[in-house]
Image (tube, rainbow, N blue to C red):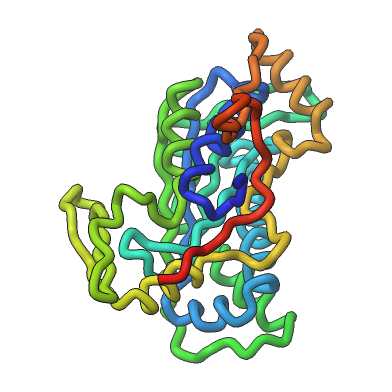
Length: 285
């Protein structure tokens, strides 16, 4: 069907993302930085998704960009790909942004690549402090009623994810997973649905809900129509192709030709020709 919330179609979306990233692949270490909105802001976020999520992207991108431009960090422009997720492993409402960043930046004036200093990209506590201030200020400027008692320490995690294509493939599996895959729905009978999930520790847990509560949980993670949950910034932006070409030239990147993977299609049982999905019929009961 090609719908972005369909668990079956996520595999093709991941393949397409890998193809696009291979065209931008750099021979450097990659990092994933995760920004999480605190519990106190989740209700506000849910009822004003377009506004809050747009500010979320804006404040995270500006924070990371400024950290990259600081001379003590890189003193260069970075590139980043952001992916918005709204669910936790238990499928609770848990908005967070994953940001994939090549480990370094480009000095446009000197036409020089500046790699990271040491094993770490940026200080996560410093990122959290700056992001918190910018995000709350942006919410107030939009005229939204920010709840009181918001915690002072927010969660930002920064970790290395490897180098080259293996890192990109790892990230695609992580970033392009749907809200839930069909194999994790264990049972659906007598009006109750049971699904499994894996905790951070690797332990498998089970959760059972009424059918209507399960559907409500899933639908909570459907984004507003037309809202893009994946965005590129810096030298990875679609309008920065010349800058990306400069980065690839400086790093002596040799791009290989990529054969696009076609989307799987339904075939006619008689003539075997591919068919287009127009709509679905729901059977009563």
